[in-house]
Image (cartoon, rainbow over all chains, first blue to last red; front, side, top):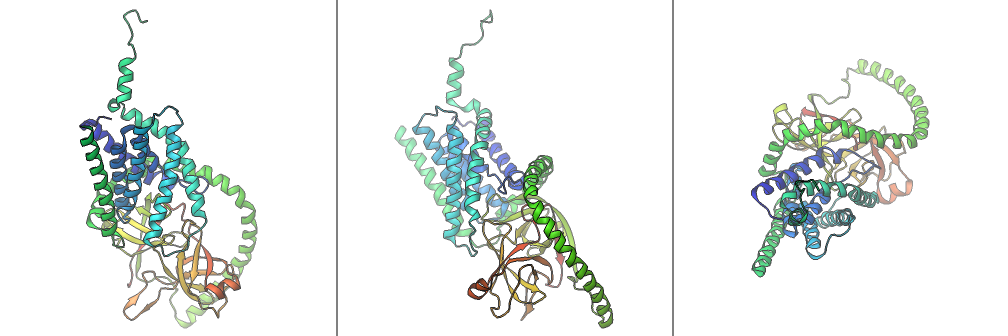
Length: 183
Length: 279
């Protein structure tokens, strides 16, 4: 991905809008008693489209913004989401995305990773409260939601960042335009 | 050229990881810093606008969830209504008697004296189960201060963790960092109400006096202790929840009973901050 100032501004807007949408909408709705978490899916999409560095920086920024807005200890979300973004970007750099299921599956897998990693960090920092078995349900259901939400999120972000995507550019160049006769 | 690019990438990644660890080390266990308050202040109005705009969509999704949940709860509620009707009748008799006795001895009704309420709407909520907090659209400009207790129509919800001019962060009683001194009524047994991580409907009342028995269905209110220049941030007698599991073995072995909060922590919309008071 070629990050020009215009694309940088779009990335910033995507991050802000994603975080606002999560805190004001997704965190406040429940299906099967679990709220969806779109932030890992958002970071995965950015990593898949922009590569490991874009993914890592976006993940760090999303985590920092969330922690600031929730007045939570800074750093934990940043660390987890930067890993998620980096891993998604690394996948894109190492493998070809041939199937349309790649993005949602990665969103699901890396959401599971993010939830487990965040839980592990919290436990390492010391949690002075008993742990319910419902934590497992929450993590698993969130990962399933990420599969279904990851797909539209990926498509939407690809559309927003289309001018910066190298593959999309080359595809557009290769596609023959309409002729005078309309053929 | 490629090597240089790889080296630069690794440097950026290392910088981000080190920054995360540094932030975690510096800010863990601290109250909100100026930076976080600044970001909250800037984003407060945006969050409010987003909250209002997304409310219809949110209500629709929650309605679907509630409809499914309501079908399962219907039978349980029917039997509970019958039980509550009997309790209401007994309660009304007790209230009448209490009013007469209060008049006789000149006691004021048991309500937090000197408190004023500020009603706020929830505009944001934490996405993870590891922090249970909500943001409301009232802040220091409305008289809200850090540590003010927060309630809703059902009972205690939490306390104010931090506040900006127009917003306040409320730490719910289901947050792992939360601890409230509670009292079982009518027995008066006191304990500490702690959450159960991952379960918004589960609280535990621990450090109980093992020699006193607590029964299922008993109500737990805030104890509101005071002594030696220190006092609880919560005024006394705010309803918190009801004991749901109180086996004799658990009480003797771990001095703990399970309870369920009166307030539904998953669907908080309007909250009241108790400002002022005699803390």
